[in-house]
Image (cartoon, rainbow, N blue to C red; front, side):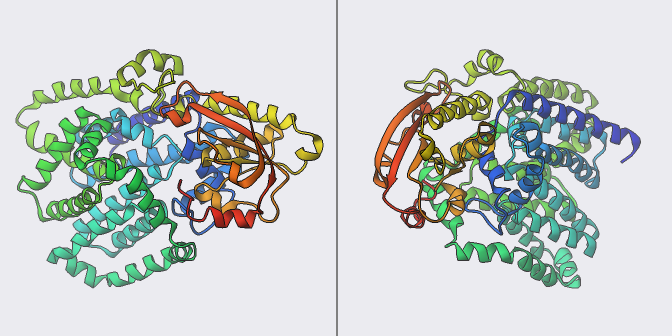
Length: 506
């Protein structure tokens, strides 16, 4: 990068970080984030829903002993900035100049899907990062056929696999390298089977963990298809994808990128790369992945869309850069649909009416819970504290809190210490692995959403003592949280694990 390019990239990094920090001031934790934070307290070679790397990152963040959104978003923000930097480097490696870099990085800013997916403490942002880093090395390997790029590619693919299992789609795309004599010869020359062996050795602990825990990944995937993916058509998924990355981005960069890759008279290197991207996309489309599963693939497409304008269109029609830039500026109006850069009241006034969702018995139906969870968990924890204080001292001593949903258990464990609340356990998701052993205490405070008589089979006495209304819930089930006092358990913790063995993802 020359000085001008560095300043351009730096300006986008500052803009990106500023938006995320503003969003941090307006948001609480999304439910899955609370699970990931808790994973950092239970380091392992695997978890029920995700590979182990997010637990390691959470462990580092937990060293601050903080329940601050800013602290637990440190690494997502770093990852988001690295994505910006390496997308610029990919564009340069492909022959792009500052104009192309500007197009690529501006689209990252205005795409609401990238805003949210890179804001939260979830494996998603790290998966995007390692996909981009791996793609950068893929481009270099295809160009230079060097062993160094191949080993870096192996490293980033290992990290990607240990972050999120959707990296398998990237691996399927990489198999396209064997279809071309140029890259096939280079792979054989560099003894690529050694890379495969290193990869398998590095992921072996996670595979062994999956095997020893009856492959929860397969159970979760099956449940996901039953409850979500089988109910959404591929056309709906693609439509959601085009909206999530901003329709203007789709029009200006994604569609031209496809044209550039498959229709132009490109070099052999570009054809090889287009096949790897296409194979990843087609497998993911065949498996009917959610819209955000495609985000890493879209990130790899953006530089080619920018090259379309820089190399093919603007040299003959320089004036066209101005209307395109204006269109992209207009696209910035969608930023608040992906990140809480507005205060919650302003969001309800300006953004929510355009994305309104009616819930019977509710008032708003806000799509993303991080917009309102600052108050939600504060209210919930205060209600739990009131119930806990109402217990006789002898019952307080050994009592625990049972969170039906992992987000509820995670919230109690993150925020409850400051209120002197007992620890929470759950049989939902990865919390199943962390449940206590031995006898259950005489008294358990149970927290759930509207799930009927869920706790009654496990205690002699179950009493509903509080209901907490949430006017912003986007499902009827989450309109109310219920707090129960449960006494005289019918079984110990070991028996409970047996009873919930096949109910982890309910």
